[in-house]
Length: 164
View 1 (tube, rainbow, N blue to C red):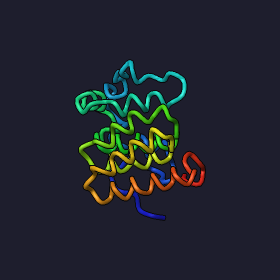
View 2 (cartoon, helix red, strand yellow):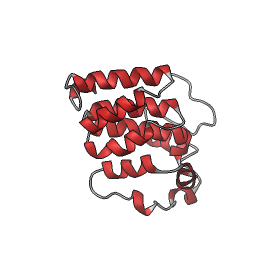
View 3 (tube, rainbow, N blue to C red):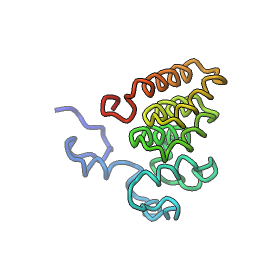
View 4 (cartoon, rainbow, N blue to C red):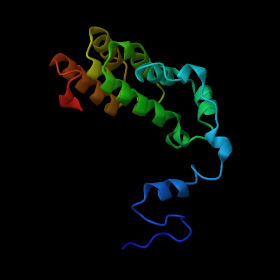
């Protein structure tokens, strides 16, 4: 049996409960557990509308919302990248506007994932946003994602389980 780190609080490596109890983000801070949820991010049926709200969140809004939460570890860029992936998996034309806006993000990681997500949507509006970005993008990785997304959309593979 593997040795457990001393002082970790984990008594049984296979026990999810003890791992959760040992996590510093989850223990000893009742104030963190009672943080308010922003009204515009409350569940309103399908998860996707909340994802759109998250993608629209400014840095200052993210900073206030994430303070004291484990999601802060991903950082603002990491959250936006993850939301772009989730919106791409949703593959709805409702996400095109926020994903098209994310193509102009300061961070290439967010732009690349927004391009991938738009390829998953594959609508004419998504293809138009991708084509427009291709003409001004300077980052090679983002250009690769834009090109791949346009190819996927052109081949009619958008929104299919084939891409998952």
